[in-house]
Each structure stands twice: as structure tokens, then as C-alpha cells.
Length: 230
Image (cartoon, rainbow, N blue to C red; front, side, top):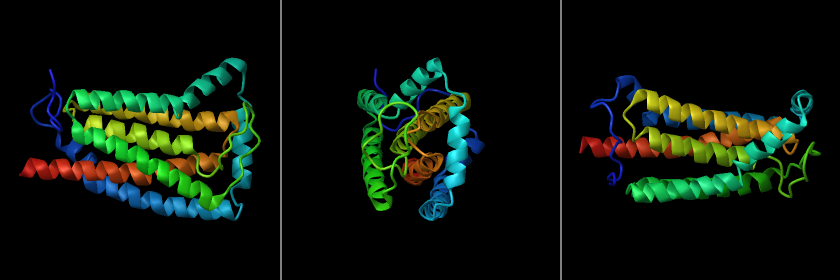
């Protein structure tokens, strides 16, 4: 049994007004604009090397908790921002096709494609060298911003937005967003723990991801609201 594209999953007849406000396009647009200003401010401080003390202090503090079992866990979590993310994207795309959520499937592809372009442009624009890793080999790409953080924020954030927008149950929406947020934060922390990124790289990745993901979610919300009014 399939669910028509853009039709919510079964739930209460009417979603609470608070949910409409929280998930409206205006909130997402405000988040995107705010993230642009914060990213610009952070990038300027990175270029001027004003984040050096912050980066070294956080790296040292996180590394002080290192032990073998946690290190293996962090490698696994970090994988969810690279190879695991690709696998999850393929599964999500297949499920969207199965439920005939064609626009959601397209939205997911556009989101990942945009994140890839944004990551490449920013990395080559800033040319920030990688720190010396605590664990594992040094990646070959530039350090700023963190690609894992950017991609995980875009993919899991937009995926949560697409799913939450099609579920009428408020507890289910909260759970979807909570799981996505915890996973994204864990992936960013894993990159700092492994030492392959500076903390400012991870923050920048989140901000860049916010710009793109919030814009995509805002467009999805606007399109759905416009369709419902017709």
C-alpha cells in the first residue's frame, strides 16, 4: 500500500497550531539568514587566526577523554557522516519512491547536490590546512568547513524536515527532530575527537549546513502550504 506524494502519514485530523508556526517557511528563512551572518563572522575570525586558542583548548579537552572503546565508537559515528550517510540516502530515496513521495525524493537529491557544491566551494575558498589527527590518517581535503558536519546537517536535517512535515503526530515529530539533532551533533563531535578537524571547522560546517538545509525546508513548507490553500 502506497501513500500519495506529499500526503501526511496517518495521525490526528488537525495538527496543533504551534507545530505550524515552528515548521513554517518564515522560521526556516530566518534561520538561514542568521546562519549566513554567523558563518561570515566565524570565517573572518578563522582567517585572522582569532580562533586558534579556542580550537586548541577544545581539541585538548575532548582528547583528554580518549580511550580505545570510545575511539572505535567515534570512528563508527564518523562513518555515519560519510559512507553511512550515502547508504542512508539511498535507502531514504528508495523509500520515498516506494511511498510515491516523488517531490521529497527530488528534494533529497537537490539537497545533497547543493551540499556537495557548497562544501567544495568553501573548502577551496579558504584553503585551511588540516590539524594533525589524533587517530587515523590525515584526510586529503581542506579543513574549513567540516564536510561531515555540513553533509550530516543537510541530509539528516532535511530528511527530518521532510518526514516531520508528513507526520501529523506531534510526539512523532519531536522524536524525528531529536534523533536527527543528536546524530548530527555526534558526528561533529567525532571529527573533533579524532582530531581531523578544528572545532571551528565543525561549527562552520553546521552553519553552512543550516544555510542550505533551512532554505530547502522553507521551500518545502512554502510549497506544501501553497498546495493546501488551493
